[in-house]
Amino acid sequence: MAMVEMRNVHKWFGALHVLNNINLDVEKGEVVVIIGPSGSGKSTLIRTINALEPIQKGTIVVDGLDITKPRNVDEVRKEVGMVFQSFNLFPHMTVLENITLAPRIVRKWPREKAEQIALELLERVDIADQAEKYPAQLSGGQQQRVAIARALAMQPKIMLFDEPTSALDPEMVGEVLDAMKELAKSSMTMLVVTHEMGFAREVADRVIFMDMGEIIEEGEPDQVFSHPRHERTQAFLARIL
Ligand code: ADP
Ligand code: MG
Image (cartoon, rainbow, N blue to C red; front, top):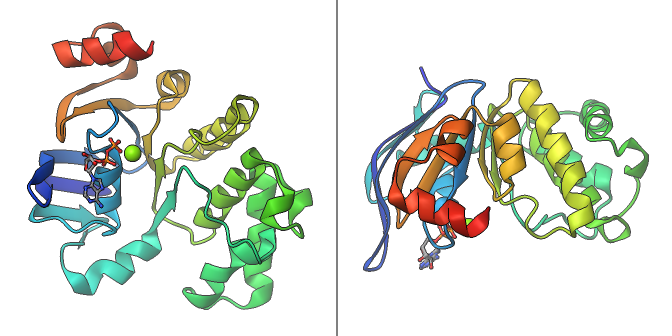
């Protein structure tokens, strides 16, 4: 069974058909990168996976749970970590408090356990020394690594990333991508929207090209980047590479 199974998924915003018959499986341990022009539905697609966006047609099953059923939504959200372009850390909480909040409330872990795991995660993303700081005292790259640690603290089964490096100064992109590469090596299931083609080539098992709400083409990175089959993929890559 795949970690994510999207079948004939359609979504409209009013008259706008933003997801048009999406069929997508993400296998356990797989790293899938989604590329495509602005407005093609990438963010909407990944937001449907933890029910941040409802769909009007089709089914989405995450780790065996149909998330179009309202009773499954809370359960699925516990298993799905999400990292956005903007870091969304709570400004009035320290790094450690940001990371331990959800596990303490949702998983009901005692403080000691939550803090121990938080510190291990901060070690993993290479900022263990920042635990007592507030978000504003950190660089953008550090804040985004805290956001990754915060998502991981819930011990998710899949991690969704929506352009996690797009808001960063160029010199900080590498440190966040490095943290994501480490995560990929630990065989986390990952679905990543990014324009970082180097990352996609190195880390992705599969690259998906979306345009106008549809999956136009997918394949191994080398196939999609070096030998795109579809004219629209070729045109997109010519613009960004
Ligand atoms: P991408 O992430 O590929 O840039 P999005 O998924 O953000 O694309 O957007 C897909 C389309 O849906 C765009 O035309 C966008 O303007 C529209 N859209 C996104 N969110 C909303 C919303 N909340 N209400 C209405 N339209 C939206
Ligand atoms: Mg987007």
